[in-house]
Length: 85
Image (cartoon, rainbow, N blue to C red; front, side, top):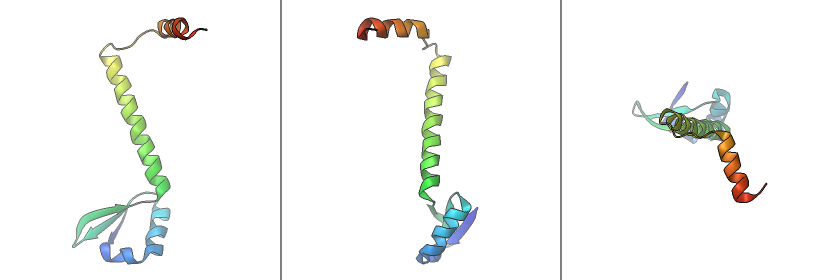
């Protein structure tokens, strides 16, 4: 985990290199307290995708726990009847 003071943000080349090397967030502090997070766009996109997948999985698990599932054969039969096939 990299932590840099906010004044170091002026050195964009160094910050970009830190983000690439860390392959994760770089924490920026102001007066000794966390203020910002800077990260490589690939890390950000991967993290957002993982969060979306985890949210979808949580919805699916909730459906299973609450009995909101239907047999696949029934769903396929209904789709064929509605859309042909």
